[in-house]
Image (cartoon, rainbow, N blue to C red; front, top):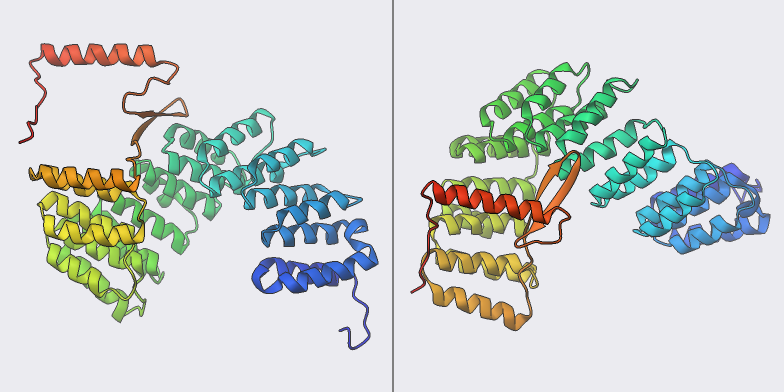
Amino acid sequence: MRLSGVEPNHITFITLLSGCAEFPSKGRDLGCLIHGYVCKLGLDKEDVMVGTALVEMYSKGEQVEVAKLVFDAMMAKNSVSWNTMIDGYMRNREYEKAVEVFDEMPQRDVISWTALINGFAKRGFYEEALDWFREMMIFGVEPDYVTIIAVLTACANLGTLSVGLWVHRLVLKQSFRNNVRVNNSLIDMYSRCGCIEFAREVFDKMQKRSLVSWNSIIIGFAVNGFAEEALKYFEAMQKEGFKPDGVSFTGALTACSHAGLVDEGLRYFDIMKRVHKISPRIEHFGCIVDLYSRAGKLKEAWDLVRNMPMKPNEVVLGSLLAACRNYGDISLAERIVKNLVALDPGSDSNYVLLSNIYAAVGRWVGASKVRRRMKALGIQKKPGFSSIEISGCVHEFVAGDKSHIDKDSIYAMLELLSFDLMSSGYAPEIVVRE
């Protein structure tokens, strides 16, 4: 274009900058050159669309501070500019700065709120995502389907069923109530909250389904222990003309694993490779390892781990290690822990599980040795926590926790329950170490 003597305009620059934003590793140098060209023409400050494209490019290229310099220099900003800056900070995990920009906005819209909610949800801050959603509703801003998907993701990961139910009721009143992605998110949320019948109801009422819809309900049945239903829907999906993908087979294999259907699982694994030409990924091998492990076939599971075409991860090895604990295979457990330590030397769970396996079979010397090694390496056991949802709020507790605002009532109830147990003749089991 330049060689032909044609002068670029703002559309040219926006297109090029968008391309650089989508491929930051390849487009960084070109993006900087284009930025220089744009500055000579004054478009970075005077043209809101070009300025916004620059903000997006630097944000996606992990140069959010440069993006902010461009943003501050813009003479005119619209809602897209502000939302792009918020998204840029969220994308780069600068959460406080994202909120600061949000607070400075002259006028917020649904996209502004969604940028925060979606940003927190995508990065695992699910409680914060729900807090901002509550704020959004208080301010009377109507959510769109992107907001709802982000909120349902947070509900699924927290297990906040009551909030999920409330959101579902809200969805039923909206124009996007038949949106496939929203319904897929509802299926996932109900499945992960253990309400598989609600998930089935959403699925059955869908006017249009995608492969993701089928995968969601299949995996939902599988992880909730309804293996027969999962496999039935897996077959029904194919009769409806949908070709199963890797995720579909993960659901089928998980169902077989949970139900102890070893031969059936191996058959599906073979069909996946031979008929559908799908190369097994780590999650598929993990399902087969889990299948063998749950059936007590530890030798077959270990052989598969050693012959996998890729390096086993913590999930695969952890599944086999848990089986070693159940079946008391100390020798195999020791070998697995060596592999786990190589993957993550600082993880406490590997050492703790091996120590517990030693203790379970009465090998206290071995258990003590593992604990001493943890101490020598400076590895401390991270406290486990339990959580419960009450009225849409998630409360977390660790052992002996006295930080909760209602601790007096909680401990009073615990004492009452203990008294009732003792009155009923309960006696705690005492383990004596030899």
